Length: 174
Length: 310
Image 1 (cartoon, rainbow over the protein chains, first blue to last red):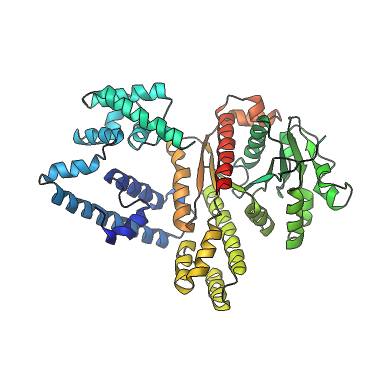
Image 2 (tube, each protein chain N blue to C red):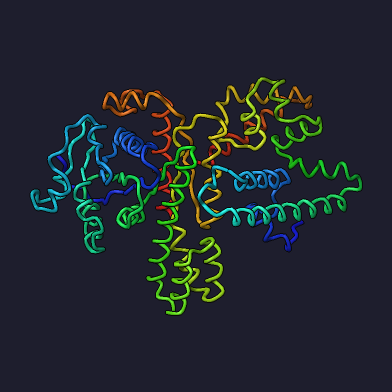
């Protein structure tokens, strides 16, 4: 279900109205980092008051979208806890991994320390940032240890689904 | 000897940025990557600050330059193509002539551009050097592919945005002139441009409320402004994110697509290759820098095919 009054807010975050909650969060953090005070990536592009205005727009858009999603989850699922978690899990293997990690109340940094896998790799895995992922032989190992560490049932199955998505994304980009 | 060629070369331009961010080394190595794939390539050294691409190729200071063509010392533009030590790769030293025409008339620039398009090569790479003079901007905007290199430093990022804004506004002014909108609108836009507007995206939205047809035609024209970003001399993991963030910032500010080609890790072998007066692709073919250049060349070619399909 898409709320049309939020169209402008989705545009502000530069995402589609049917974006998963994960994507909403990602876009929000990406933009916030971009216009933060002293951020390198927007240095010299616009004046400080303009950046602050932009930041306010981003914060407001994010707040409205999240509030609307919460409302929706409450309506859809009688069990509110479940509803919110279901929204974080968009069914993709990457979403499943992140959801399992969040349920275990573990930060990326903590997981990095346990698995001895770089935080950037883990982040890229969760964000399905396929182009930045290592070669399949390594990736398979990373995914398997990630899934096992979070006690996901049938980890090999998840790994295979993830790799399939990865290779079909690579084919699409060709 | 260079034989007859029927198709016009694709022009890729490297512009903006700051001195020392690696523009020239990236241009020469991209050209070498193309030429190694059997594509005929010429590089026009148009760095007004100091044309010295011949040094990067281990060649002597060239006797024949673009000036020789303007002064009719040589009859044909293709006679200014200097063979480099590499197969399928030529160099045109252009700096002196381009400096002499400092702010040349539009007609002369157009003429040179037409001539360049008759060169018997598949690709012509322009090394425009730092700075944002009108000449530089015009060559940049006339190219099929536009590249800007930054390093993860505030000075370099600021310079890159300065150049991109200058290029964008030059294109905007020109498309307003070409769209033959009403004089009042042109005046309105002229006033805003002179005052310095907050963001081009807002300007276009504002224009849309006055004249929707004109706004649509202008934003279509501006949609062709799709610079490719390269982040060079990356030293830390978090710096690899800079390119993606800058691409978003460009889209946010200009409202056009901006492609991030990828990060290039700082690599001492680039330094060693320059000292040897050889190309990195030749001296250290397996270095991360060389591999990145091969990847970028492929990405830029693929993009060409995509735009041909349109």
